Length: 126
Image (cartoon, rainbow, N blue to C red; front, side, top):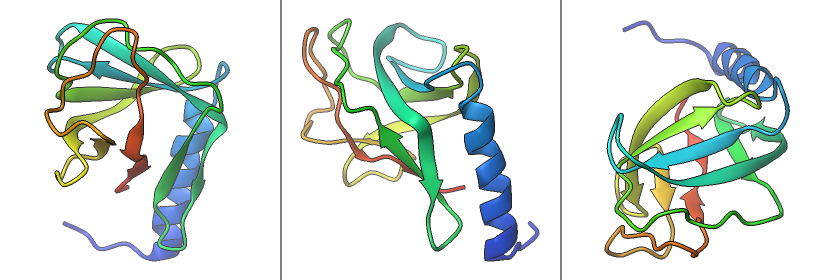
């Protein structure tokens, strides 16, 4: 593995944010598993994020909440651009987990149809 500078990481991650903003507001889609059932979509702000002092991506949720479409336990998420094309994917965990997508307030990780998707830590470790 090659080590990169903070400036390099920030530039690379800014390109990811720019890509995500193509076509409108980007989203995070939550699935029961990789390639599984779509449970919920969380729309992000426009632009969808900022770069932290460490050069990492801090995703910003839209002001309006999205409702969960189906009850289930999300274990996989895709970050999609405004045209709905997946640009990154990763594990969904609770707030204590190691996944890049962390859900808040779900000790059991179950989300319920009609509920609201709240991301505990919407930053990506890019």
